[in-house]
Image (cartoon, rainbow, N blue to C red):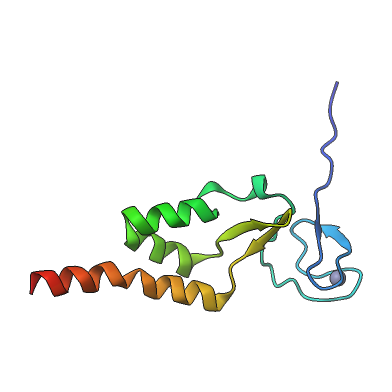
Length: 109
Ligand SMILES: [Zn+2]
């Protein structure tokens, strides 16, 4: 039996109507989604874009977190919804990545 693949829907961040995943413009309100990926379920988020992974990289390998925050969004789950960190939060995280370097330089020199 050939299973027909069900089209995946995501919620428009502006009008909350369901739109097809991958759409760059909402057909209901006309808002541009800007090609930005949104996820309707946290399990759809790639593991390297998840909150816990960002924290792991921060504690074990800060440069990797810096690459993560500059290359894309980090997602977390809040009230059953998948949310991405705001740009300001990502810039802050990116700056935090330099703290270990500053500390190492301070200790060594
Ligand atoms: Zn919309």
